[in-house]
Amino acid sequence: MKRTALVVCPGRGTYNKTEYGYIRTHNPDAALLAQFDKVRDNAELATVSALESMPAFNRAVHTKADNAAALIFAAGITDYTAIDFNQFEIVAVTGNSMGWYTALGCAGALSAETGMQLVTDMAQLTAGGSGAQFIYPVVDDRWRPDPKRQALVQQQLTLHQSELFMSIVYGGYAVLAGTVTAVNAAMAALPPCDERFPLLLSGHAGFHTPLMQAASDKALTLWPVSRFNLPQLPLIDGRGHIWPGMGGDLAALQHYTLQHQVCQAYDFSKALQVAVKEFAPQHIILLGPGSGLGSAVAQSLIQINWHGLASKQDFNTVQQSQIPYVLSMGIPEQRLLCAIAGAA
Image (cartoon, rainbow, N blue to C red; front, side):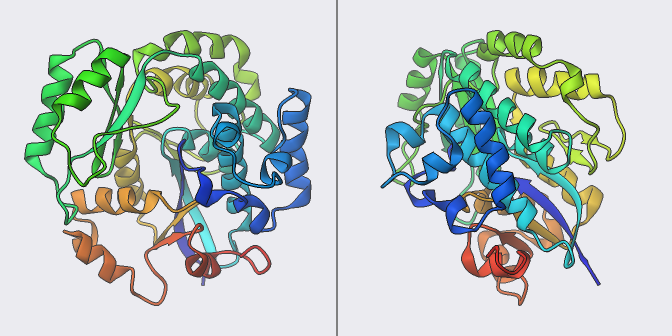
């Protein structure tokens, strides 16, 4: 009997040196890759195939906004098609930040080609925007909410109102964005922790804030509602709103995709929490590239004490079962448990 699964798609910042060659390694469908390459070639941009075939990872090339977006979207869609649907019934799809576009592609609201065009367009539009983005933990070393760190983050948001915003609620991390001045001031004020944070996200602008309004306005002129399809699977967005499969208002979906989530905070934690509560999946499948979503997913589950999870140790114990609750396509041994033969 099939097991039910929620699919989760990663956002920007997940294609790094360690992910170089991810698509090529996992034997993507040649016809699907050709569709992606056609879109990029028509736009006179480096194709996914070309980017994946360079002699080595090149930070300037591979992390360039539209290149990274294309690689992440292509990796996510090819991973989705590699899932063994004879073993798993996908009950819903969600994603983090740019992962919303990948989720739309997985659910059929965008075709492979239109999805690639959308992520390319949005990467170019938003990369030209102002501001910066950084990440800061709001949990302790056991992944339990840390009220002191939460209060410090809120203090900075209050201090820099209209210049600093919550950008992404990402499990045990707060992702803040705003003007460069406000971001620099907040990063200087927050106490350093874990030898990494606060961490400026290189190449990121003021995503999911009002600083992206011009990009949103331009996107609405480029992307009429006719370019969207009704989703074939339920989608959970960055507000925790559920878009039903085979139904819904396409104009509303267009405006959410190109307006609301571009200019307002993306609550990934809420999206995930709503998804598990409403669909009760037997597994959560994380698409690649990489496996960076794992900790944020676990922390989001711990926040609601899902199935009794109260700490990092609890989650690690659950993951030691024969078939882990969370299956990451970016971890080879877990990929073997959910991908079709030949795509692992």
